[in-house]
Image (cartoon, rainbow, N blue to C red; front, side, top):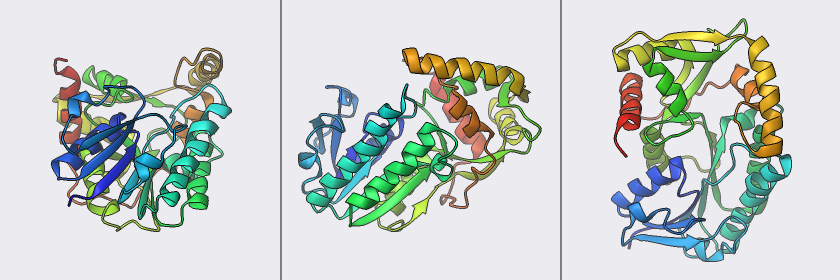
Length: 302
């Protein structure tokens, strides 16, 4: 009998890739979906859809599952209460359902930002979400603090790659802008790692940040972009005297209208110096190849 895998966040960037690969490998997948029909393109005899959200009764999703991936979460929100509702209370409810249903293993998708909860509301909510899951779930738990994830289908990084196609890679300024480094993980590498390592218990009791590349500066990323795109790509810093007023305005528009991305908290995350990782995946995709595939996906029709 195939193992039963339950997921929240199945319609997100990572979720869709993970569902597709789990089905290909013969797992039975249960997916929590807020919008009816959102996974119609992945229809499969081993895929069962549960309509609802993190405030729903999650017992049916969790009952009988061998493993539960909790991927759902908010990256941006107008207020702290929204982050709290989804990233903390939602994580707690998922863990409680897994505990009640005696699920053997929970794999929690968190974020590297949980290392530095003082930076932003998002970072704080992810750190507190981890704590909530640990409080509620007594079984085998793996916490995946994902670094910057990119790849085909990611709308969040699409503007960056579109600018790279034009020869530019904008970077948050400051005197350390050229030496500031961070880990990155290509979506296929992350999915393969979650199935081969997390699902098989290799990360039980651990907090890890699987990475395609463990430390990458923006000038180095520009060089990989040049190799991938066969054109010159220049990393250039945007002065903080420009970024801070923009981030302040965006913080206000987020609060009032839920519009924008570069808040003061997000800018603090961009400027943080400790986003490196030693948790390198096996057989990582070469960065130039990963960038090329990502850019090609944005150029593809439909």
